[in-house]
Image 1 (cartoon, rainbow, N blue to C red):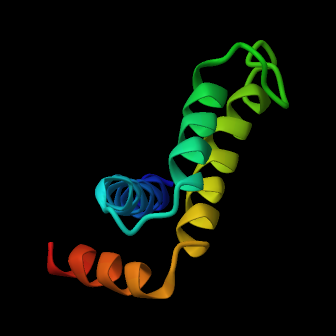
Image 2 (image 1 turned 135 degrees about the horizontal axis):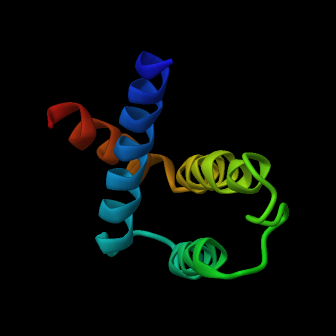
Length: 92
C-alpha cells in the first residue's frame, strides 16, 4: 500500500509541477487560470460532492477528483506547450 501511495504522490507532484509551469507560461490559454482557481476554490470550500464528515469517503473526492481534474486540464493545453512541459518534467 505504501508503494502505491508513493507512486500516486509522484504522479500528482509531477502534474502539479506541470500545471505550475503552464500557469507561468505566456502561451497558456486564459481559461487555465480560471480553471485552476476553481480547483483551488473547490479544495478549500466546505462544499464537496461527498461531505468530509463521512469517514473515508469524504476525503476520496479530494484525493481522486482533484488529480484527475489537473490531469484533464493538462491534456487540454496546446500540443506544443504539452510537449515542452513533458520535456521539462523529464529533465528534472
